[in-house]
Image (tube, rainbow, N blue to C red; front, side, top):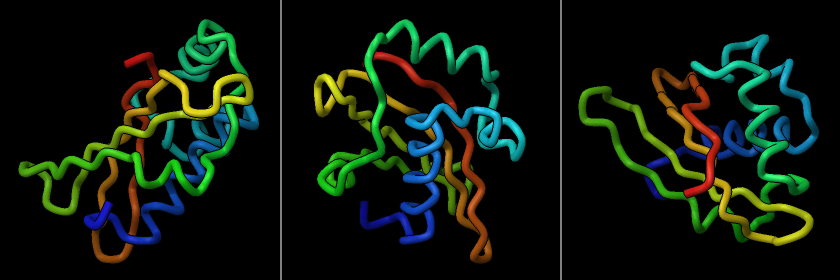
Length: 114
């Protein structure tokens, strides 16, 4: 995770917190929901059938970061989700993160079992 700034890590944690708390409207309101809809996310979480939780500290070491050559300052991120029932789960949150001039733009690409 050396490529991501602390601000990007905070933004990722906040997106996961919104998913865990069911605050999908906030993700839609400010565009962090990306190309998905609230219904898409609700369905993915419901179909998984477990209770999402915020990322524990140890989850940060398992985040995969892939620089996007076509987008300077951009990264594709895979975040392993955690649940009450399983701890680390098979559910993966895929994000696009762009760091530009100190600003962070983050968008959900997908939420699915990997």
